[in-house]
Image (tube, rainbow, N blue to C red; front, side, top):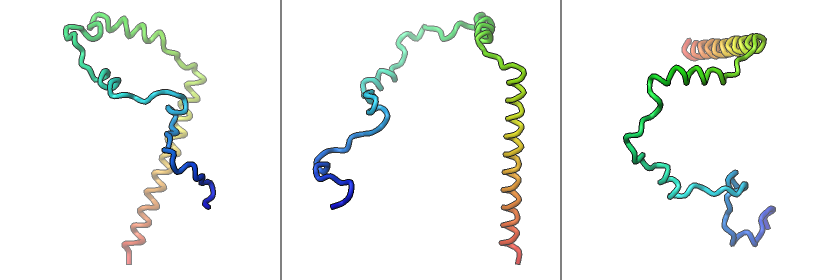
Length: 108
C-alpha cells in the first residue's frame, strides 16, 4: 500500500484547487464572455469630451496626484541610482566573464 493514497479516492474526480474555487467564485461562462465581446450598438455615441474639455480634465486629474515630498524624492532618486550602479556592475561582470570564457575557448 502506498503512503498518502486512499482507496476511496480512486472513484472520485479531481477537484480544482485554484483561488476561484476556494473562494466560491464561479468561472467565466460562454454567455458572459459573449456579452463582453458585443459591439456597441449606438455608433453615433462620441468617445471622450473633445479637445475643449481636455485641458480642464488634465488640471482636475493633476489635483488628485499625491506629490512626493523633497525627502521622499531624494530617497527615490538615490534608490534608482544605486540600482543602476548595481545593474551596471552585473552587466559589466557578465561581459568580462563571457569575454574571458570565449578567449579561453578560442585561443590555442
